[in-house]
Length: 475
Image (cartoon, rainbow, N blue to C red; front, top):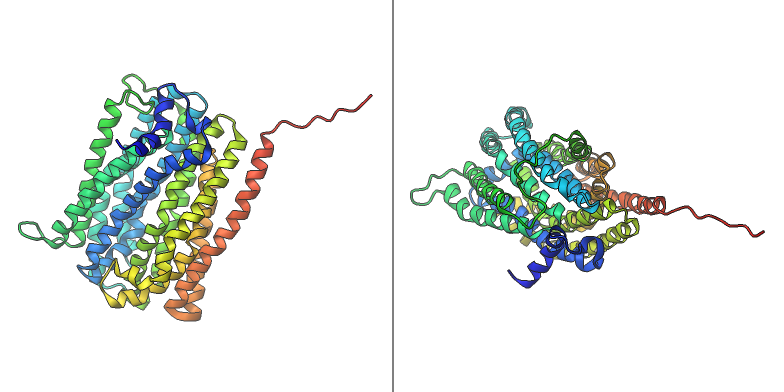
């Protein structure tokens, strides 16, 4: 393994082996970056799953692109609830380790596996039932609606694999190992890149499945990833995160702790598909080209933004363990360091899209009508992306401490209120271009609001952990 990967993996592995834990004791900036580099790379890979699909489908047909965008609010339910349980898993695992309760982690592993499977069995039928009413957007072409239905059914049918892989990876992150999740996502992406053109375009003996092929390859890729993760849990010996025979014991307190973060996080994660659903409804009367442009623009914006999500998740690991250990001043420094790095990174990543938005949209589609309809979204929403990183850091900061209800607020306000409101006002004032400007303004306003709130809460949090000053009077 390369030396830099060894250093990135060291915090979790050393603490598992009983050695010094850099997350609690090491220098903050190098430890944060060491955790974040593989996490950021993993975020690129996660984004690339959808981006690869959109690139291939963009060369298949405009209707195929629009179908994926139309199905997104429903298919994202898997990521909504899986990501919520993942956030709770990372937070709980990190706080257990920080508090010196590593012996409870194998039991947490078994609880998370059981909850992942149960959640999948619940979401698969619910998601398929929700597809039909969700796809009835006014002005949607029947062909686009049919393709979206096919894509959604296959995606949900394989949901157990994606949920298991997401939540098992969250356990490794809570331990402090961000390298292994990166490796398994790399395996999945390579499979997706290789299989997508075979099942979308159907060369040689392969069937020409179009949108359906994109869904099939994603499910197959996550199935392989799940097997890799399960093997690691079963054979690991130098981890606290592992399968241990006889570790299971029903622990209501552990389930309540997971639920206290997971339930509000799920509601917050619903904000993105709700936002996309509302905006799709507003722009659907403008035609398939507008819907396709919005879908492509979101994929592009995710690719620009998600690396900073890797920093935020690394912050969650460090804040969770240090909060569990009662080190509040260190929690404050970690959070402010994350803000600085996230804003710098996002500004650098956003610059090429801001300067060359048509080129950036052209990476996803060669349809000139879609590019012209969406380039303003790509440019101006990218300008506002640094502010979105503040919103996510605020949400993860609350979740890392186990305060799920407070962690729900930032993304809910941004996605459900500010973004759709901005698009609605913009459409009324300036058509589709005005809608894109309104989307960007909503993001910027949300960032300012939650930066103020986060800085205030950090000050209150640190002061609450300091002993009161006792004034002595002279006699």
